[in-house]
Length: 118
Image (tube, rainbow, N blue to C red; front, side, top):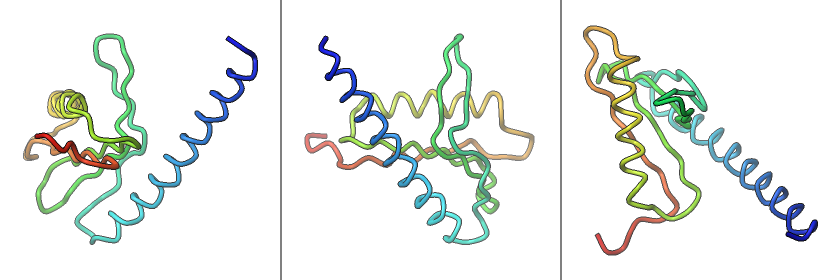
């Protein structure tokens, strides 16, 4: 690999992380403005499953629904694997984060575009 290729890749990764941070900040602000029923809990919530770390982009609690709301932001087009990843997050939250009296967590995947052939 050429040294310049490595530099471009690092710069691209930084740009993507900067973009993700800006989008997440706006999304976090937008959801909290939806009303007092959403309570912000975490950004980049780390969860460990089978000795691997995963990160939920945003985690909220909805007071009326009485459940955790996991939001996963995808910068590219929607891929079917994202659904499986969200289901993994939701099962983890259900097993490790829910408390008595809460309903099962729900997930929201925000991607740039949807799949056209579903």
